[in-house]
Image (cartoon, rainbow, N blue to C red; front, top):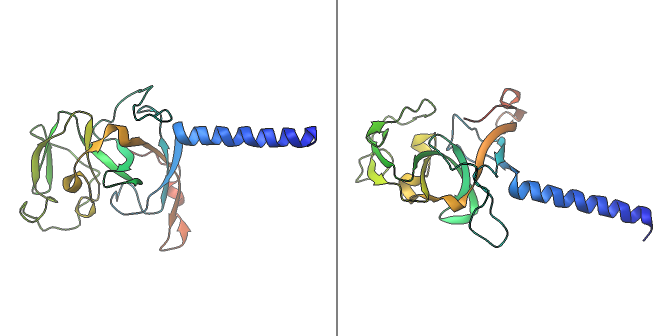
Length: 200
C-alpha cells in the first residue's frame, strides 16, 4: 500500500471514528414517526438530540457519567421505550422523582397544582372514566427515585406513562434540541418554516 493511499485510509478512518463518537455521545439525529407530540412536533420533523447534557453511558456500563443536569419538567426527551428497548420514543417530562402526578378530566396536576400546558392539543371532547382507561383520569401516583413521568403533547393520541409507567433515567438518551429538516409526506413538500426551530 502506497503512502498516499495509507494517508487516505487513515483520514477516512479517523473521520468515521469522530462521527461515531459524536453520534454516540454528543448529538444524534432523530425522526418523528408519529403524531403523539403534535402540535409541538409533526410527523416528518427531523431533530437533533443533545445526548451529553444528561450524562453519557461509557461502553459496557449502564451508569452515566459527566452529568450536567437531569431531565426537568417541560423537557422533551428521547428515551428507550420501556416495553421495547430497541425502539426510541419522544415525549415531554411531566413529573420528576418525588412528584405526585394526577389526571382529572384531562387536566394534569403535579403536587396538587394544575399544570399550565399551552403546548397541549386535545382532539376528543369526551372524557374517559378511569375504569375505562387512564387517558383522561389517572393517579395520583408518585414518581419513584431515578424515574420520570412523560406524556405526549397530543394528549388524546399518545401512548405514554399513563399507560405503561415511568421512564428510567438511565434509559434517557437525550434532550430534543432543534429541527434541522421537516418533510410533509402528504403534500410532498418540505416545511421550510420549521427548519431551525428550537424545540421547547
